[in-house]
Image (cartoon, rainbow, N blue to C red; front, side, top):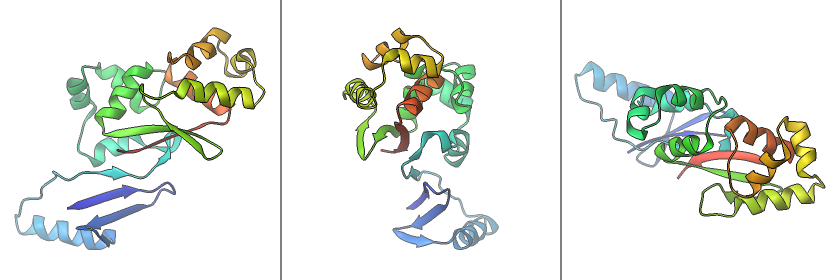
Length: 184
């Protein structure tokens, strides 16, 4: 089994049957298989190490697993225009974004000062945000002013109602929480 791992520092590690290989070695193998008309199976699992969401290339990851935006739109029942916005990290609906991340077999983590919480509907990430905000000595109004939203938007986030993706990321940046993504 082959595994491609995208590391936080931007490097790529390739493993074949548990043994790390250089890109050149894997490239030679792939070229040999193609030159000899041997079929290459793409039924392998791609994994990514935890990396900052803002640095994560969603479009590149899709290419690496041979998925197109149109396929994801069809398989998730999310419009193609929304998928394109997600790939461009534009202002999109957070539940749709979460659905796409889950579809890609990835998960998100909120991290602050070594404390982390998985960003799912089953965890108390709203409480984590509240605790972190209070620890920083910030009110809903303080954050709203810095982010350019309203106090109720910040409050609703802490009550586990999600704003748009860009607003969510700005709020996290304001209170010093990092959003990471990784394979399940």
